[in-house]
Length: 312
Length: 234
Image 1 (cartoon, chains in turn cyan, blue):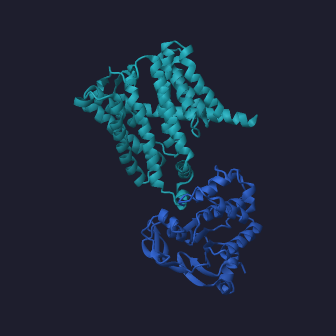
Image 2: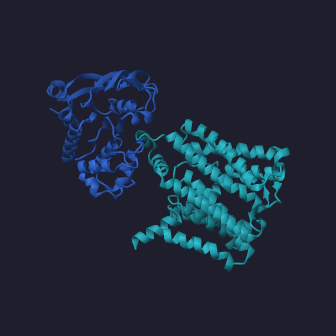
Image 3: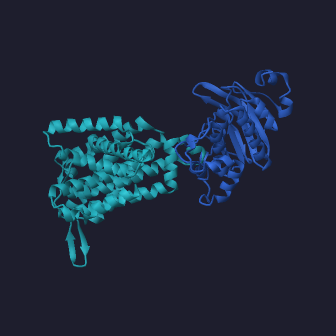
């Protein structure tokens, strides 16, 4: 598996030298951002066992905060990421504290986080003076980086490709480091049996909150970039369908692995573009594939690949 | 070491424990015997703080711990090995043991503890890298006890360790409890299997419908007519 990941990363690094199609690059860029979202979501869902419906909200809040700071207040893009992440962190700590203090589990946790997410969506939709309501905000600025030969705007497809690939690698490494540490062991203990975890002296509340906050902040990090690539932010970012898409990516790729959500996200991002059908049929087919996959391979693509290897 | 008095616990309107009182001295093995639903598990869960009592006091090492969290009680050396061989089935034996050391400041330095536990339970050493869920019931129970020992407890609460185990394994378990006591561990053993429990305990309390009805020296108790009839099948 490790070699497969290394080879995949290597291929991803050299791909732009071979592939010149802008549309394929764009799919890859959206795929990398979706994968970062899915990996951070899986920290909360797959590894801690909490079905958060707040992930799209964290993503959306950060996208809005960064966009508003840059377009209205003329902040530097990179600087604007910091307050955006702080806002997401505070929100996730509030929502998490409420849910975990009341020991909301499974379905109840999902519903309550979904409600918080909807509240934020409605605020964004109706706070016209700041968010421009349902029209959203058009983003014309592009982030730039400083190089010895002057500042370099990240506007071309290739530069976004590498930026979002770096984002995915960073999110992946952060989650990997967390899971390999004692925090990861505690999260596993909580997922498998939280009362048993408590008898071992694990502060279940603290670790659930930690996982929820870290996952949400990482989603915020993705949100910060997203609007600047797509060129606009809109209330749809907070929507339940986006949250469901993330769940679908994780389920398709494989819940019990770190790389699974990456694969799931890339496949589901590319799939609608590969299937050349009218829009309605495409969505129906896409849904059918999902249902089929979940029924036939409950451990996702990664589960299928690894079990084959064991059988051989 | 442990002094419990006037403990009252309810689930909703259902009173489960009524004025339960008992004590344990350092180095003792004390058993709490009773049938199903007598309140044994509730007593142990209340002792470690998984269940809040309505009233009563729990003094551990002279300090009232009713208000402190489970985490703090574990840190103070009060450890529960829960009922039903609760382990993490999908983690390996080694990982399960490691989890027991979680709250210790020196949790990354567990070599000596592991050696001690493997010496006590040689079969765990053989199965070190095996998934815990794939072991036999007896082995899983040893693992649960081993994990409890990893946290270096001063008082260990064992909740029905013999449940569903073969007679020969139960005998082995009794020997293990005695060995642990000989090494200086204080043990509170909640059991339905009175033969095993009275066989390895110093003192015993009999719990019936949430009340302590009899108590005394384990050897004497096993000879009273009431206990013989109700719990020893004689």
